[in-house]
Figure 1 (cartoon, helix red, strand yellow):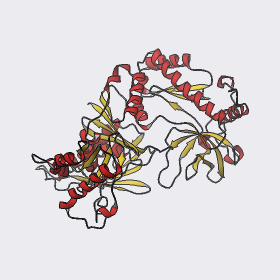
Figure 2: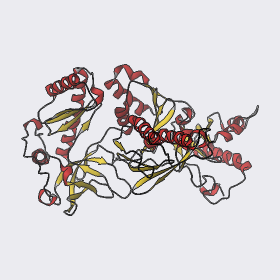
Figure 3: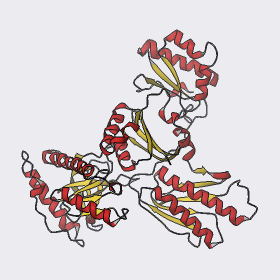
Length: 524
């Protein structure tokens, strides 16, 4: 299996697609200005105590206050609190963490009312992004994640991933990490550290320690609260960090700055693979070039079609996701309904595992498969689902089919599920149901070009239109595009874009910055 990552960095948001054997399996998009990402650390104040929940609300600058449960304060909360006071007491000279003394562990059966006070300053880290009507979820157990290691201040344990099975390798890693870990720090050794040399692990340890030092220095100098003390690596680099594996053939990026950041990171963790990071400067949109747009439009939505006419209905509620499997127009097998149901269900298990990753669906997922009478068929379906989900990085749990034929899956949820609405208001009539004659559309485009060149003064630009419209504009010996170029200059470029509706258009300057030339009354 080969994997490649496609990163589309737009003006307002960054979209990342992971392809396995050219098939889209993971997709994430995030606004550029989004600041409440998992992993961010804030110095913030306790806003309100909730004794009934044994929790408190903390102001981290989000519109809804963040939630912090007593159990998420962590065993080392007392040590953190004392060290935070020592750091804040001297704004000029940083109190070193190796001189900090360990305080007694926090009682597990304690109360938030006796531990915290309103207005108290805390160092907190986001573990769950705001979802639906809920604010971010916080923890006081800080961690700094790298590719091979996770550094945990005020912890004295070295833990090795349970997925590393070799006892000799576990012992080697434990001994090695203990020898390079500074005082008052703990470390979790990740699965990908298996077989790595001390130089690679030591280099990452130094990077993570630098992040801690930068964080605590910001805390020391903070004057206004809430204050972001550490910002998790950009979404693109963070995803590469978690996903990166030797099977990657290429990472394509259409933004030079992000491309350089990713190349630097890959050079750090796998120098021999730095060459796979490539800057994409093609004229057509990057997602169109790698067939991502088409897969996005067909992969999302309420109804998902898969093999031989079968399909799934995916519904999302506040509490859970519900999936219904249907055989559709699938032809029945000669050997009966049972075999037909089995094959439809196995195909659904393959597609559902992809959909869970693709949409990043979390929480409780209930799947209504087609009823099967044979116990061995039900077991085969369960095993197939478990096998398919092995590729999923999110923690999950799958239960065998219940007597009602339902499969229950729980999947870790740290950010909202990706929801791409493939059924939208018509972009050319804005939901009114009336548009100008399609035949006059090119006249409208020419007026926009004339306005762009002669009034605004932008001589060179890209006009993105639907592929059918682009083909019409480019057809003929002296095409419409050639006529425009003769009239307005050779800076006029027409680019087909699959994401646009039939009578939709977008203008971009030579730096790929969007130019808003569209007005609603143009379409009526």
